[in-house]
Image (cartoon, rainbow, N blue to C red):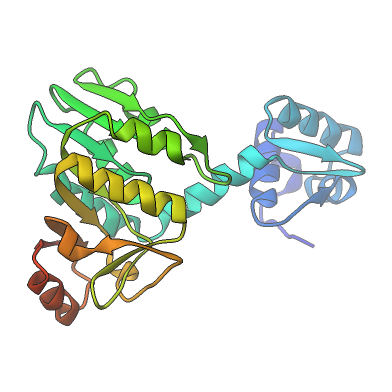
Length: 265
């Protein structure tokens, strides 16, 4: 049974609810009786906490307990994905931001590194961002100097992304200056991999409608393969990674044609 160093009587209702969400992020469910023992409160108090969380659509009550809603599972999974190698992603995003000028029309894909770039575009002037990412659109919705175009499509299960034929058709209506894309893997031969066939097709379309394309991938993606190839680094103009990338791989990638930029952390 989980043990806490904090005296159970000191948990406020808000703290209990936060703790319940955190517990459920790492396990499939939890019982009312277990929570009552852990917090040192009555089962009725735990039921009231769960009622609040259920009203907020954070948990779904089950017989004798609760589990996270699908929405919250997505939120925790995406948060964990975003935090992985985040300093490297932020350094890469800072280099990518240098390529953006006022008046540019940009395409940002659904990766967490491109989301870090979106955070840096909030102070942009006269910029248009075209994206299939709900997370990118949300990040930039209040940026005064940025016009956001959210592409249509099918919401990908388990991720805040739009994809499919509607997304591809929507992209075909635009012309962009720069496309920024992430990758699930970059093979040692320079192949660009994506774990989803539909996203791979959308990435190919992004490169077709943009004058220049830039792939953003931290060192952990190098040497990794996934389900679908969306092209190679020979198809892009710029590749940005971080200082952890092996020098031999970067030399090979540069021979394929793109400008290779290594971001310092």
